[in-house]
Each structure stands twice: as C-alpha cells, then as structure tokens.
Amino acid sequence: MIQALRKQLVRGVALAALLVLSGCSTFSRDWKAAAAKPMPASSVEGRWEGKWRSDHNGHTGGLRALVTKLDSGQYEARFHATYAVVLSFSSTVNLDVRPAGGLHQFSGSADLGKAAGGLYHYEGKASRTNFLSTYKCPSDHGTFQMTRPKK
Image (tube, rainbow, N blue to C red; front, side, top):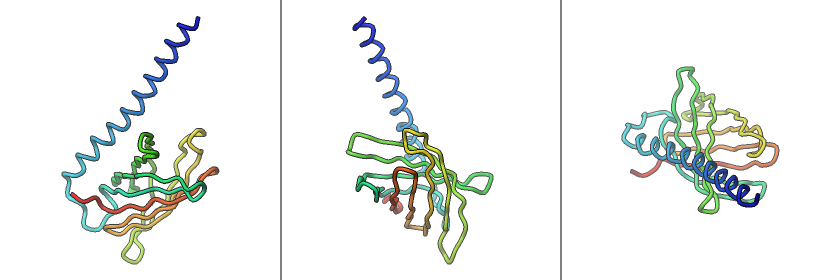
C-alpha cells in the first residue's frame, strides 16, 4: 500500500514539474524569438524585464514580460516571475492600452485561480523604455517595474 502511494506521489510530482517546466520553456523560447524582432517605435509591444514587489509581505523577485498586440486592439501581456531563485510563476493578462501625454496607460484583469490569489487587477503606464504597473488581488498587492532588456 505504501509502495503504491509512493508511486502515485512520484507520478504527481513528475507531472507537476513537467507542466511547470513546459510553461517556462515556452516562455523562454518565445522570449528568445522576440529578441530578433524589431521593437516598435512607440508601443508597449515587445520584451520587458525587471522586478516585482509585494507591498503586502515584502516578497520580491525577477520579472520578464512579453507584450503583443491582439487583433481586438487589446494587448496580451505574458508575465514570468521568479521568487527565491528556484520558484517561478507565469500568467497572462489582456490589457486595454490608451495613449496619454506621450505615455501608454493600461489596465486589465485576470483570474489566476484561487490557489494563486484569485482575480488580479493591473493598472499602469509605459513609455518606450519603462513599464510600471500596480497589481491587486484579495490577498496581495504590489508593483511591477521593468525596462527594455539590453541586447
């Protein structure tokens, strides 16, 4: 009986690791491919990198984003965050982007599931070189601060 439980546990852990790593590898592949594309002159599209910080508990980590314009006029932001060097998390949110005084203001929401904190709301602004956003959910709130990556 214990042997069977161990096998199920090992299979469950292996499946979870595969799912996490495949999401990470997809993001990494797309991140590298986006480096070869020209950056639009005045858009939030493209690659971003920096840090996230929770104002609720002080946790912080690395952050990368890929922003793509959708046919609907919205933008898709794919975020990949790290925490404590070995943990990572990816999420995707559609953003409504509007020009405002030489900047792009944006907002959007995404339900990341109960285990990840539920419904997140994002609000921020971006220039050609700087991306600043707040995020809020029922159990956390904080900031994303990114710039364009160096080649």
